Length: 326
Image (cartoon, rainbow, N blue to C red; front, side, top):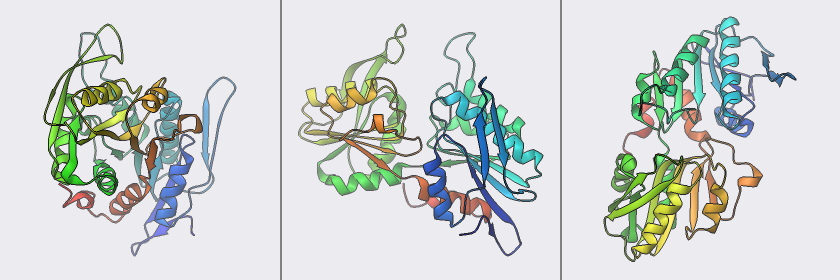
């Protein structure tokens, strides 16, 4: 393997990975048949971060991959510093790869005097020197408009849906949206798998964060295997309550499919002890040993990210990766 790829115009592709999810960065590099850029990174005693690259990136097309995993603010800051280091080292172009976009849920103001942190994230990376952002399954599509430059929005649904297709016959399958906000996603799943759609209507308790109350189910689930689809699983409360509502309405089995496995706090215990038979996520975020459980299946997003990197480097079409999938 070589440290970089050169095409016919002598352009160089360089991939650097942060410390948040080294396994994903290594896997993407392997799919590109390159080595990761040698990087020295450490944290000072007072919490400040230091990054230095071990090879020149002058004139190179650079890709900086960092998962915004816990501790999330440290992961984000490290990626910002990496981008700044590349900019100051005369990189030709810098693409920020954030498989899971930090602060994506803070994409609008719900009340007065609140921030729009997802927009601030985009501004920070632009100021640091990013020319392009690449992410997987943004919480809302409007985030693409927050960054002043190209945003490649990758889509994990085909990967997850193809796996589900190997597990359940489509003639006994119902796709379920756990709330009104995920209906569009569930509709795409429904079209892809040729399965009917059901929607769970819920209302959040504004006084208690991460708590929801399920109200009613729209759609036929009795005697069927239901696939609950969402972009992320955080504490697991929404998903587990949705699964309980499905079982109460006669569902035969419930599978959960989600792109980002945050699995915060009580999530593992909730999912493990629930009636859900399988939880399928991708590795956009690292899944540590203490978050592993028998029902969990983790699919690799690395091939998709590597293909998108190749398309960007070759001035191709990232959209072409998903043509025919809807």
